[in-house]
Length: 125
Ligand SMILES: [Zn+2]
Image 1: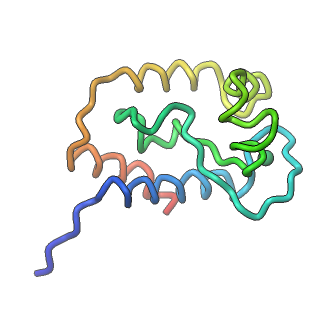
Image 2: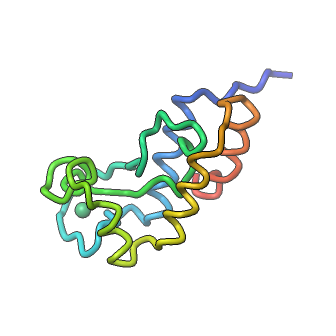
């Protein structure tokens, strides 16, 4: 029997990106975005270096390049980005509290952890 390939970080981040976009219906989630970009970016609300939420869909949002990196309100430029996302109802205060709680749980990036993360996102793949 062929040996099953292990889930690499690279592959799992790729899946995460696909899942974030699929969950969003392949549209920019920024409130009232009308920028017509065909390209969409999966954005991590916190650095993807943070293992416990690296592959967590709660930590992601689908954005057009304008709202991801280029525009004045882009996630990577606007320190109030999360506040705007909450104030506009795209996400909730509870979502952020839960994400921060998950972010602070000490987690090792083991094969079992990666598989668990994969299981949670596979419905969007
Ligand atoms: Zn946008």
